[in-house]
Amino acid sequence: MNTVFVSILTSLIVSLITFTLGMKSGKNQADRQRLKELYKNITVHFQNLKKGLESHTPKTWRSFSNKSGNSDPLIKRMIKNGDIIEINAKMSKRAEETEKQALALGWRFYDIYKDLHAISIEIIKKYATIYHESTGNNYCTKKSENKIGRPFWECGFGILLDKKLIDEKISYLNDSPNNGFNFIHTEDGRILYSITIYPDDLTDISIKDLLYEINSISIENIENASSLLKQKVEICKDINKIIKKSMRRARDPHTFIETIGGAFLDIFKI
Image (cartoon, rainbow, N blue to C red; front, top):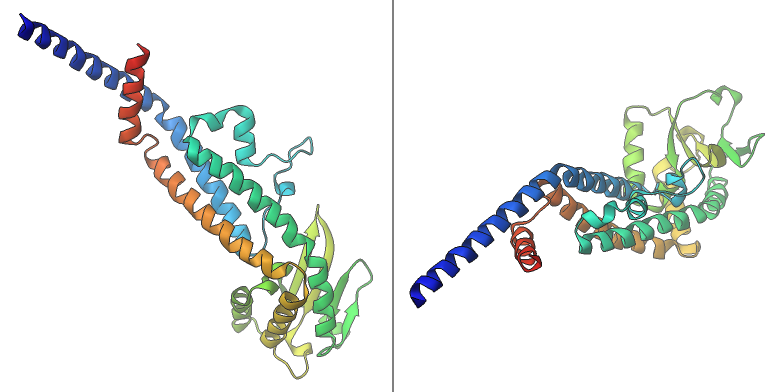
């Protein structure tokens, strides 16, 4: 009798577990496409944040301004509309914190570009005649008026804080040696600071050595410059972790352990 009872009970438990796992798997499958899309969006969002930081043209809160003028980056928007509760809780917390840190760092980068602009002008004056153009904080090196209209590579001021980025830009001159560099910082479509440098305007220094000198003196003299560069590295590490996890979740939103664990929790809810 006891054997029969145990057998029946075991069969009921196995059936219940099988049924619950089937239901859980079905629900997960129904949610799968939506979750894959959410994780894909998170991946792309943080890849863009990382690209901006690494190129020293970082995203800021202003980069995500909506029509009403409020900043609405992806994770903040997901929190507002409730999508955040559908993704992994641990990951969502890290994503929220890292998004805030990355965008705040972007503001601090742009805050020092005024000083970077001023230091650049003073150093260039040692090696070339530099002209203050008629509008705004726009400067240009030129020996004669025939330089007007000459092509140049446009760059953000931020590359002057990284010698690797400087080397990358200098390599462009191999194919276009007559081109100049235009270092520019804009805000809301307005040019705040601009310097255009042509290599053949320089005396007793190469364009590479000039930019290296600007780099060294700027990092040494601009308050918080070294600190910002270190923070950038740490935030990029955090972003890499988020990207790695979100890419994995974009392929498979529900891990096997989560499916089993969720099924057992559902059993106790019955």
